Amino acid sequence: MLATIYCQVVWDDTTPAARRTVEAHQVLYGYPRAVERRLARGETDLTGAITLVFPAVVQGLVRVRAFGIDGVPLGGEVLTTPLSGVHRLSVSMPRPGCTRSEVERLMRAIHPWTSGQLRRLLGWEALRLEHITQQTGKSLEQLQLLQRSAVLSEQVGVPVELLYGLGRAGLPLTLSGLARSSRVSRRRALDKAVASRWIPAPSQSTRVRHLERLSVMLRSSIWLRLLVHQQWSRWTQRELMTAVEFTTTTAMTLA
Image (cartoon, rainbow, N blue to C red; front, side, top):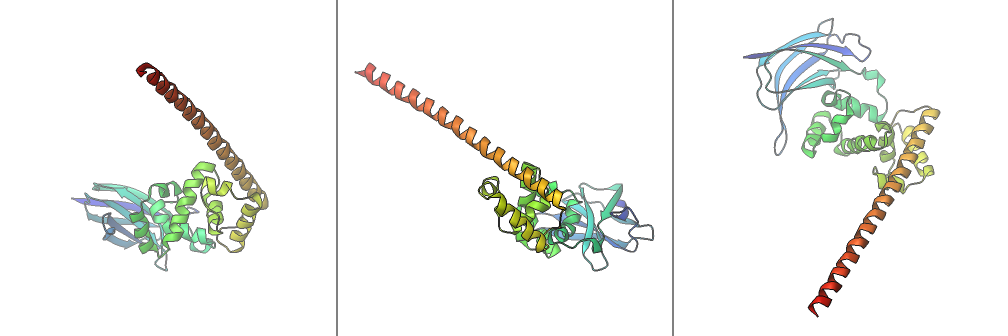
């Protein structure tokens, strides 16, 4: 039995990506590292279309990736197994000339695994991070920093890129760690990240708005932790008083 994938490859502005190499790989995650086996390879036509045909796959995942002229994967999608029959797939790729900052280049490199959805980073385990490091040439520290940024972004509602810049500038990417930093230090860290081209430069109004939201969310987290601590202390105190009363009553009864 065969699997057939009709794939349409486009740039992020929806124009066809012609004459681009596309590959389908089977990926098996296991110890000590993931194993990847190429199933099919071809080149898109002038309309960005390509047909990939290979034997049906029953284990692991099937990753379809589109490459730039420099051999760097620019886009891709992941299909679950078992995979057989006919499938239609659309792959969107960012144009190479549009990525200038470090975080943009990093997102471009992992795009075949995320399809632009950074929420997928949240569930990545250490083994998968190491595999993607081997495939992209990016450092494990960068991927881990981007993953922590994505986790924190879910908690505070601030863009991943901004949090990546703060972490790249040396601030701890945890609620408690950022809460201990001042507004001035966070603003300076963001300025440093932009100047070093770790992140793209946002407009002044956007920068102020995101930093203000971060401050509000950090204050909220502090109050929440304080409330939980107070409730826990009251509960502990009640339990302690109950234990003392029980011990006293028991002692009096035995006496």
